[in-house]
Length: 117
Image (tube, rainbow, N blue to C red; front, side, top):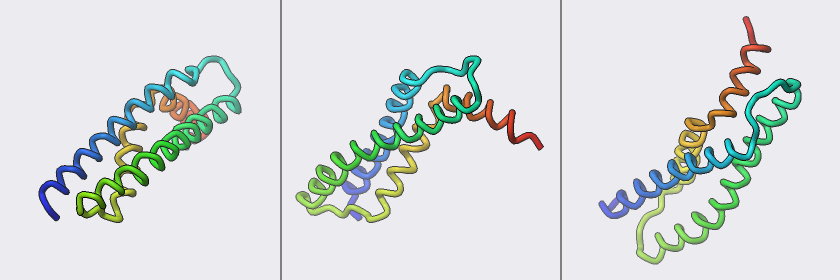
């Protein structure tokens, strides 16, 4: 692999981590914090947060990576590794779940309440 190819891959990894952070802030803004709600509503909200997040991710991923980035790599005769898609989703997920504060609080609440051993 060429040095420029490695630099581009690192740039895309950083971009997807930042994309995960930005999307986590938007999702935290969209969904309410834990209040005195029923546990079923909290479970539904946590599920909806994950579904909405990954729907947004896949819509943008399809338009950016599969159309623009792959085409860019082909036009400049650079190698786009087949495992890069997996790396990008892992990096995005780590950026996302590191900063989803309301989601983390809801999961901790449910875990403490129902998974006591």
